[in-house]
Each structure stands twice: as C-alpha cells, then as structure tokens.
Amino acid sequence: MCVDPVTAMMIGSTVMGGMGAIQQGNAAAASAKYNAQVSDMNAKLAERQARDVVERGQIEEQQQRAKTAAIIGQQKAAMAANGVDLNFGSPLDTIVDTATMGELDALTIRTNTYREERDTRQQAENLRGQAGMYRAEAASAKTAGFLNAFGTVLGGGAQAYSNYKKTKIGSYS
Image (tube, rainbow, N blue to C red; front, top):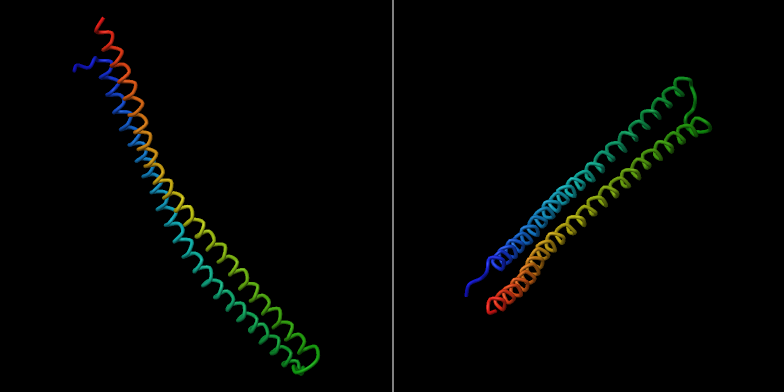
C-alpha cells in the first residue's frame, strides 16, 4: 500500500500537531507548578511575618507599660518633693488616670498586634489556597494537552483517511 505525498504530509502534520499539543500542556503545567511553589513559599513567609508581628507587639506593649511606670514614678517624685500627700484627692486621681491611660495604650497595642497578626495569617491562608488552585491548573493543563493531542490526531487521521480514499478511488479511473 503506497500513500500519496499529500496524505503522508497530512499524517506528519497531524503527528506534529499532537506532539505540540502535549508539549504545550506540559509547559502550562510546569508554569502552574512553579506558581504553586512560589505561593507556598510566600505563605511560609507570611506565617513568619505573623509570628514576628506578635513578638514585636509584645515588646511594644511591655515598653508602653514601662513608659507608664516611669511617668507615674516622675509624678510621684514631683508631688512628694512638693510635700503633697499621694494617697488621696487630686494627686491620687492623677496617678490613677496616668495608670489607666497607660494601660489603655498597652491594650490598644495588643489589639492592633493581634489584628495585624490575623490579617497576615489570612494572607498566608489565601496564598496556600492560591497554590492549590495552581496545582489543579497544572493537572488540568496536562489533561488538556493530551485531549488536544488526541483530538488533533483523530481529526487529522480522519482527514488523511478521507484524502487517501479519494486518491485511491481516483487512481482506478
């Protein structure tokens, strides 16, 4: 059985098209896998950032309390130097107000720290989700490459067979 040159070229083109579809699917899969790795790495960095946020927040909260204690100490020293009794009235109210405001500042720092930590951990979670989507995309790209190759080979094979039949019929005339 001898195949005419046009049919042979159709078969060759079909095979090349199928190989190209598979290669394209593999390239898309490799790109998606790389993006998944980058997202995983960024998620790990975000988790580290969240831990760092908490550590820095705790230090800042302690520093705020130390500042408040220092201010109260200065207030007590100044009032005592002027012979003021610190145990009642306005002097006591001043010390209590300073302590209250200092504690509110420390608690505000804590609240802001935990909000920033929560946001950073949410970012990490989003990045992990994105990595999962990229992995699914990689699997789909490979499947799509093989399906496209199968479709190309099937369509090209049918066309080559049709062309072969036409030329075979025409050669009997």
